[in-house]
Image 1: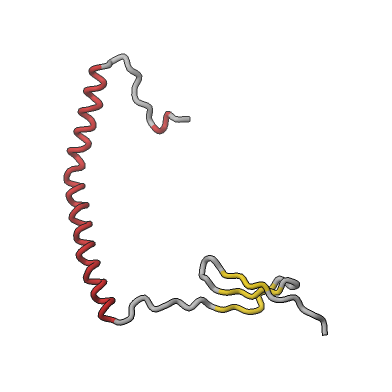
Image 2: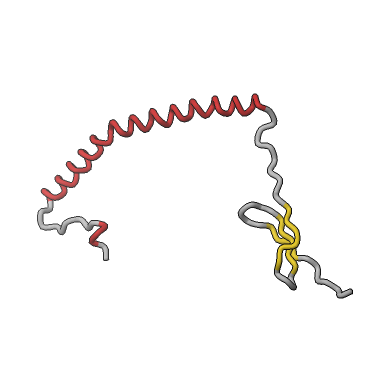
Amino acid sequence: MAKTAPLITVTCPCCEATLHIDPETRAVIRFEEHVKPATFSDLEAAVQKMKGDVGRREEVFQKSVQDHKSHQQVLNRKFDEMLKLAKENPNAPPPQRDIDID
């Protein structure tokens, strides 16, 4: 019986499975799936986490609404500032746009 080389053990970076590879044939000989630990020990902890997420989502939504309401004011302020700079220095070149950078 011929002596075989030991198997190479590799851990998959994506799914964390363990692969045992034969170096001579370059084939996967054995595959061991990664066992994920339980994320919650009981159902009550999962329910409490979901209730906490509802409050956080509502807070983020309200902030988004406030940002949307003030967005037009911010744009007007930026426009007024750029207009003021253009009037103060009429001989200055116009600001460079993204499309001009080539």
